[in-house]
Image (cartoon, rainbow, N blue to C red; front, side):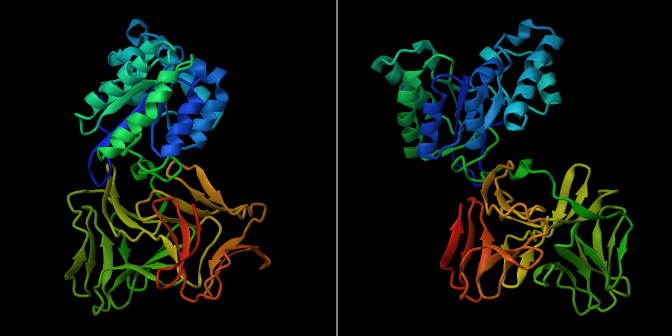
Length: 441
């Protein structure tokens, strides 16, 4: 039921999951997970969320994945289709009202489901997850005895340690669960010592408050479209929405992606061919032709009729068809050099598309995680039209429309500094030698 959660570099992963919450031990479980800096997934019951709404908010604000575990924990196979739908939808509505997002993973109570359950979950864009390691912690029934603590640890280690990608089932019920809380640190240390990376069921890694690895879940960046059959003649420029990046068919034959300040992010290296032009062909191939009609460069995406090209707001130029991307310049921009700026609505993404630094229209500069959670902000909202400038003297400054400095990094006096956004939720200013001058995470 769903594929094992993995990380881009491969290796062993472990997914800790907690069912039936939130409950009396939620705060303690969250505290342990955050202290160790590990990911986990909480499958919450809707009724429980109404009793412990503050814990749902705490789970979300800490960066944990929250899943749907039905409204009141029935055996789904014994319900009509309408009743099953209601069990799912009431939780979705409750979570939206509490944290502003909908669950994208679902676990059926007792692990029982039928084809109707699967179809309803799929319609609501939720992946269905079971487990392969059962700690049976619910059997402790609130006991804190050493017997139960050791039994939970033993099951997690013996069953989980034999697998490359274990999904570990624990509980977070309404009653206190002291044995689970006591066992959790030992279980975490065991998997850490045995080379496992902790993930949630979307494959996010790293501390819960970091950006994680949900690049695949981020909506496609907006783009200016070049449709099938369209030709870019010499001297033609296609700007990204808002004008942060420019895709230029130069008169010397070179096709180039520039920042708004003229920094080259990508080029076709076909200069020396004056009069060359580029064509988004109807077969899906994007080709640069010389003035005599010779193909100088191509994206090699033919056999995809109807494909189109988009100059995106993240700095990439991508050829898409209806199934997704076929080719990209990989020119995503993650830094500002001296003299470059972020105008209202412009942003930088980290190299893995995991974090964003956004200059909002209200004047606030905000660092966002992959799921859109605010990690850091300058607090300069209330200044519509403000822009952020990486000055040539090394200082990073937010200016109002009237030119007043609203906020600054205080790194002036270091010409050649650059601001960078990393996959680890860092926004930093470094000198040309790489020395760290300023950082926020």
